[in-house]
Amino acid sequence: MSPFETIFQEDIYSIPSPLLIILSKPWAELSEAEIDTLSKMLKAIKLSLASVQVIVRQEFNINELAVFAPSRVLAFGASLTTPFNHYENINSEGVAIIISESLDQLDDQKKKSLWTALRVMFSL
Image (cartoon, rainbow, N blue to C red; front, side):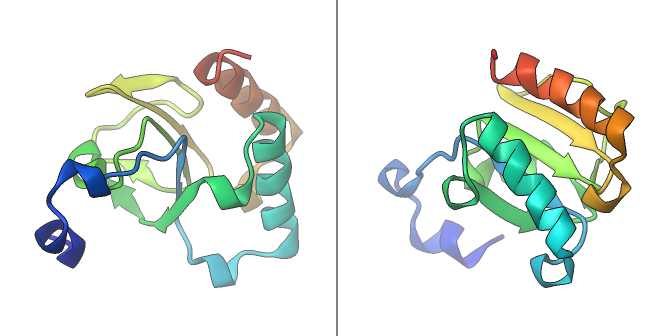
């Protein structure tokens, strides 16, 4: 359990994020190219790095993300405990999820597949 869960239990402190990004490696280990790819992707869906939450996990389940109150989750290199296909729009407990390879593994074809899934998720 997170220390914040025990300190701030009231809903008033639960500020939902338009998007929760899950990375499989720490932010400090991302290359400039990976950060640039992520920034461009967010700009295309009318978001910025400042408007999203970013966490690091190798594997996650939807229950442990409840503390972040996300409405949408985009996972790069992290896997959901229940296996799903990449670039598939998943809806679990009211949270839309897309799972992708890590940012450094995205080639042009994978970026197109991800963009198609993002357009569905964000109704673009």
